[in-house]
Image 1 (tube, protein in one colour):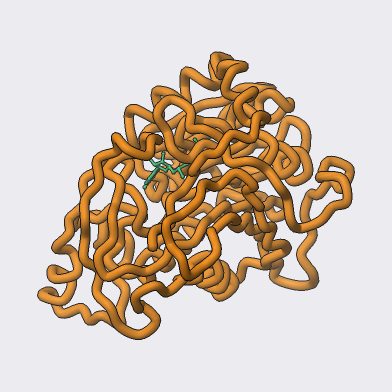
Image 2: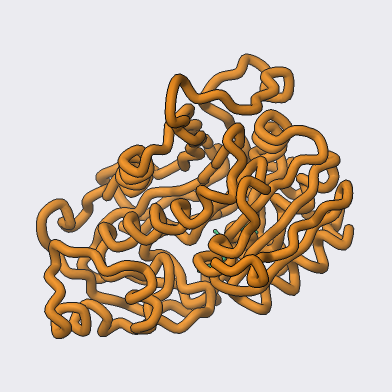
Length: 330
Ligand SMILES: C[S@@+](CC[C@H](N)C(=O)[O-])C[C@H]1O[C@@H](n2cnc3c(N)ncnc32)[C@H](O)[C@@H]1O
């Protein structure tokens, strides 16, 4: 990567910036060892498009070009053929793509830095229902049906264990997994299924870099974590901000930012949505940088980091009202 292409990172105290574009490209343009903490929630597999267009014929095109179902195309091939992250025809493609994104960011992370990734699971269905944008709302959200190839572990009603598959892919890429924090959501709405429990948790993985020699050493402030320092945290899912369905609850990310990024350090959210991680970082005396592919959400993120996050949104997080942050289907 040419230095001239490097992204300029916020250098002043409590400054946040948002770059619009594909995080895959932007991660590759960061100055080496410039980031203290990557904290993010990528699009989950097979749930929504965030308004991006996706080529539903992509698997056929891969096979026509000589690929097989056992092989996974690189992300660059995938997006060149109209694929968007989270809409991969097979969960294996999604896991490989996501792991590739974090490899792109590895050089930008300081040796003592951390990566926190929030990710939820999906039930497999041959015919699944995809929300077309990131807007919250149970009734008025446009949806489409799509057919996903069955085979192997991809069977009707199967909980796919996508977070675990992703964590293993990261371990295979030399990351050290330090915690699998369970985010318990007390306010998930009832589901119509009569033969399983409601999905009421998501994962928040903490990865650090594996040094060439010895044991991993990284910044960590134990005094900033939740009382009891347990790996299960209970935080209500928050209503989306600015039409986004998946806004981070402040209470979930604040302890992560405070404990895994030193004061005035740089926090990066490569899938920043409406920028909640950035505003929480700045509020706590860190610098922040966000990447976001959709113009609508990058505009919201810019507005929010300019200090316009309404107190109302933070209040709603406290109320415990029933709210569906993610909808895992079937
Ligand atoms: C789960 S949401 C993140 C929400 C965020 N944590 C918040 O608090 O608002 C994932 C975001 O990633 C964005 N996104 C999807 N593909 C992307 C890509 N290739 N590069 C950058 N952003 C992407 C989506 O538009 C969406 O806003």
